[in-house]
Amino acid sequence: MKKRTILLALVILFTFIGGIFTGVIYTTNQTDQAVKPQKVEKLPKSDKNLVEKEIPEEVVEDSKVLLGYVQDFRDPNAVDYSKLTHVIFSFAHPTADGGILLNGDSAIINLRTMVIKAKEHNTKVILAVGGWFHINGGESYEPFRAAISNPDARTRLVNELIHIVDTEQLDGIDIDFEHPRSKSDAANLAAFTSELSNQLHSKGKELSVAVYAKIHAVTGTEMGFVVYEPSMFQHVDHVNIMAYDGQWDGGYNAANLSPYPFTEKIVNYWAELFDEYNLEKEKLVLGVPFYAQPEDPAIKQVSYAAIVKQDPANALNDTVYMNGTTYHYNGVKTIQKKTNLAMNNGFGGMMLWEAGHDSRGDLSLTTAIFDELSKSNDVLAKK
Image 1 (tube, helix red, strand yellow):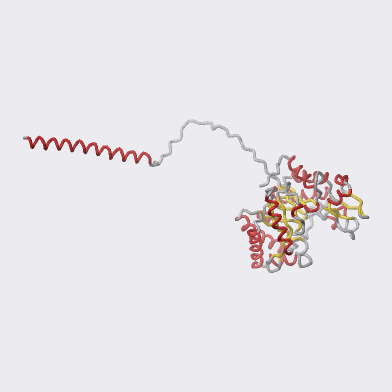
Image 2 (cartoon, rainbow, N blue to C red; image 1 turned 120 degrees about the vertical axis):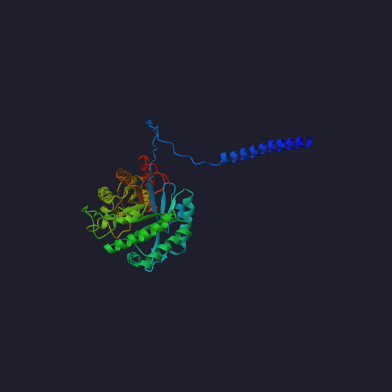
């Protein structure tokens, strides 16, 4: 009897302990499951028409660019970077087999100094390839044309430019092929632009292209001897319109350098062209001259800085008599007027040739452009 009583007591004890242990295990498992993410089934759509609270639209103002070309022999310390979004170092010279040349050690030293100085002002540095004159003499057209016409040379030129962008910590490339003179030229330039664009944009770099004004300074009509493939402009960030040097149209006339009516026709032409091909007009950048053209072609051009140095009052005019001839140029008022013209037509900014020609201080043309861009409510913000 005692044995049976003891046995019964043990059974009851083990049953009680087992129950507690089982409960602990269950509770632990349930706790583990509770902290694991569970799949949430979509709730059925409510029949009620809920009114969403309207979120105020954020207004983001587009920044306008101000690009300044700088020749390779300029002292980079003399450039005012504070008002420029981009400086374009000019030039790298293409070779027919796709190589590039710089103007000796001084050019590469100036380029490196420019990169250092520009970074202090959050200004981008772009290297221009091409230009009118070649380092080996004559026009750069022939070696440039040869390089972009051959697929192997074209790829080599792209790779050479990408290499210098990487090694010198540049922000992009500017193509200055002066000028495509046939449909085949235009097609080859478009192919070169596309190939270069793909590599630059994959690195977060920029690509711009300098283009001929395309308008005759005397007749105001389109000039057909320079040919562009419109699809090319899809691949670039900025289209820098060289709206100057009209003095050679229809016989030499210094007054046709870059008067306002001439610029008006150029702006209208490019705005309509981009509308026609559904291209972004924000890519268009209006170029203005910072130099003066003499009526006597035997006398050299002079800088705007030299004109203002002779008499500060010259800043408000567009002509001046000095060095035995009359010079034609763009003073502050004309530059301001052109800047507003570009902004009113949806352009993305302004370009100047060339920064080394500008006057410093209150009469600076760069400052005049900068101030007009700021007043247009499109704040000049460096990207």
